[in-house]
Image (cartoon, rainbow, N blue to C red; front, top):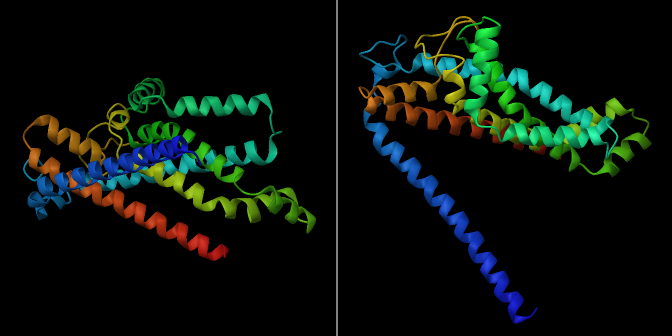
Length: 277
């Protein structure tokens, strides 16, 4: 290796470690800032069953967040995984339609969330007359995260060696059995990583839900009811200017929810990997 090549390698290594250190420093700063600002204001009244202007309870928002996330994932994950299975396992490789679908999915993944919110407002809320509801918000979110789930699942399936499929065929297994007993289990950790990313985007989404799910601070008992998620609750408290400290406390709870979701998903992925071994 020449001196110039070594210099280039050292510069690239420096940039890589510098970018990683900067990202880690920003993350640590954000976490410390949220904890310092929010932890002192965590109190039992914030977890009351009903929201009032005095207690600013986030319990309805926590329940609405879980409800919305579960419904959005129940819609988008089967569609995204199924579409990816067709593109990788059944569609002819190199077909123009497959390339068009991939380009469209990547384009949809880059659209700002507020555009999805305006679409949900015009279609689900206004045209279908659903009003501001969890169902309208969940469907909007499912459309928003569908490209992410599809592309992540597709890349995970592509990473599975073809020799594994050929070995399954050689043992007499059919196409469907090979997909569900060989390809999908091998790609499960990558698929789960996509679901984790999608869940994080759902939990932290604000703009799309303000236009579709609304901001009613009540515990939802039906998908057709309006409700606010934790991120919308935090935005509402901050924008009103009357409960800034409670907004920071909500940010702490939102951070804890995201960490717990990621930890649980990572544990499931590890268990799946150990089961395969």
